[in-house]
Length: 356
Ligand SMILES: Nc1ncnc2c1ncn2[C@@H]1O[C@H](COP(=O)(O)OP(=O)(O)OP(=O)(O)O)[C@@H](O)[C@H]1O
Ligand SMILES: [Mg+2]
Image (cartoon, rainbow, N blue to C red):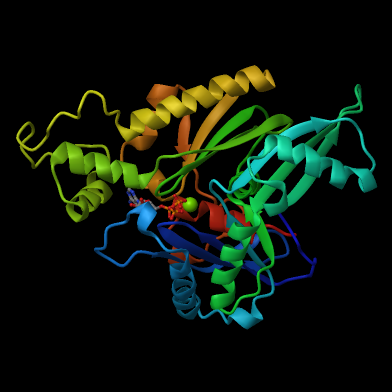
């Protein structure tokens, strides 16, 4: 999704507004690559207040963004290159194939095409597309179609404007995940599975050089892991959240096992199993759709990628080598950030590195 005027810029700001936290990354552009100037991750729910996705108001983002910019000493009026993103149910991204069409016909044709593929009503849709390639044999075009609802785009712009910023390039989360990965990983061949594990959803992207692009959201994230702990260990929300941050999927050895753990109701699947099931389902679908099963690696990112034990669990169950994605290969890190590489920044970094 872009509505950009291309300008030469020396510094860029990437903003990932999540339902749980806002992530802002400030980069300096180098002759080649970027240097991290600063970053900030700030929850959008006050400390100690329970995060309940359905209770969250969209207008809480603007004031927090103001605070973050102040902390980072970024003057919103002087930001040269701002890239942010939207995600969730009111966005969609799909790779489609059409017959070859010249530029002047393509846009209106794609609008009609998009209505077939994308679950947003036509009059409420902002559409963007990118031609991936034209197949030599058939002359068919492979196109990446991205759409978001106008309401969502307006809500997003309002948060930025409240903070004194002028909305510029607005990407779709899944595309930004893929972009962060392609700019910061040594990708040669094969297909990669990327999971951006947030608070109430997980963006899943399957992609590789020359491989079909597939994206969907899995409706589970950190919130569901906290709920599991509350249920399984009979804890209140805050205690469970702290337990999660410290122990993740593991048992605290200082607690007597058996005493505090109630067996999960047999009908209730754990969040890690629900995610694994969705992952497997999507992989099967991808193999069938794209005819490609050359899965090389599974990369996890986002705040919930830090959940202890999750990486190992996914690797064992999905049977693809799994790593936590650290998006800093092409970002120079000053000494003071050396031990602060954080997969929760993956999306914001990818956004800030986007050139146009
Ligand atoms: N060290 C950690 N261990 C486990 N979970 C963590 C850790 N740090 C943060 N989290 C969890 O990560 C989640 C926030 O991650 P993130 O910022 O990626 O989400 P978000 O983008 O705000 O959410 P969404 O994309 O779902 O709207 C929260 O559920 C939080 O509890
Ligand atoms: Mg997120």
